[in-house]
Length: 164
Image 1 (cartoon, rainbow, N blue to C red):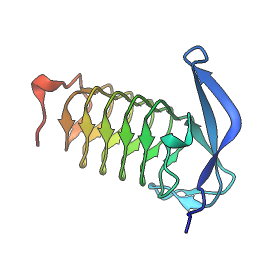
Image 2: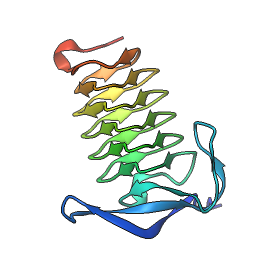
Image 3: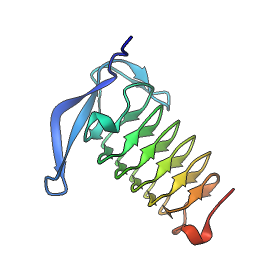
Image 4: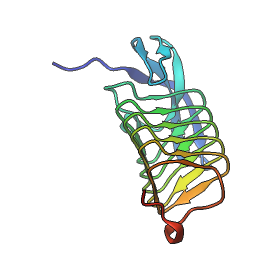
């Protein structure tokens, strides 16, 4: 049995990168509860995605507010992207993960489990933020795996890997 769609792309569009990428505002087609317990009602507008490939129909996954998800990036399962966050490249936001505020997740990065990326934080390269890790403030996590703790300082890279 085919599951009914959770959202649709609206006709409201914006172009970024001098018109090279077209993003569409999404609209909920049914009521559901997001991972933070907020009810998204049928007809509510969400954030911006390039195509339905960016946001899964099953589960509680949602792109809210003015958040943007584009390129080959994916928001899956029960993940939430909100605020003014950008998720792009081949990034994958998965599980119960949250990306919000002005955060950027790009490249081949993964944010999964209960992980959070927020503030003005950047996760890029081949980084993984997972477990109960939080990346916030002005932290930049690049090409490293972060599995626990709060990281809100300067860049973390391969040379100072956190393998906890």
